Length: 297
Image (cartoon, rainbow, N blue to C red; front, side):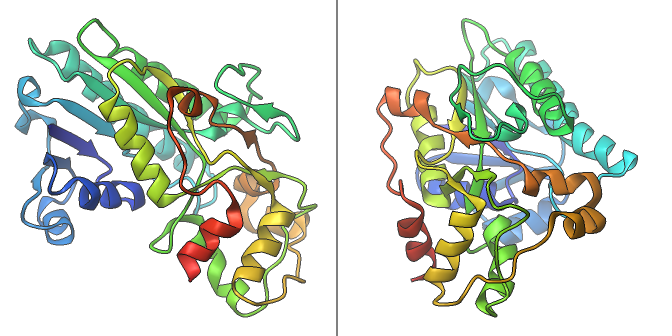
């Protein structure tokens, strides 16, 4: 296949490029083509503008672009950047797909389980629509609606409602490891909030699964089948590192440090990948201890 990726230098995008390098012809849209090619390898074509891409020659589009949602306080300017970095590129991709006379057969577009908002203990599958109205939910909802505009008899759209991707190379786990390795880790707030996670290798496999199955459309929860509470996650990560987990992070301290963004860590969703499992996808890592052991072993 001839595949166009946005967000190809992020955690998932970089791993997908490596995963597909010898299977497909890859084009990566990036703000810095030379740097991206140095990182991804000379076999990957890098472009700075969609004007450089002939969408009549593209078989699939993987849209993962977006400013990282965790890392900076959510000021008004940061919120605008978080939205525009996702919405604008998605709108441009959809326009190019619709303008093509022979458009790509599939658009796999990013989203996140944040679309559901805070949901306490409620089991959530893809049919759940009682989204809690908050910033992350609004961001993802508009992101998905823009992507869905590409749906046609020629192009199917799959939406990746991604959870916490576990990888050594980046993401949440990389940020959590240093304090836990020092024995300074612990639950966040009450620890009762659910963390819906997925091992990076399963993330790559499920994306490939959606690419290869032409009957699959709509939203898919990209999470392992067994979410855990934050308290459980903290204990299991500490156990995998042979360290204690005895220093909780009080909610009030986190809110002082991160402001509104702290809600991502203090609230959660108990998300189940019902559609992927029904379609026949099998996760290699269904239990958190196995996933952590594979990463830390």
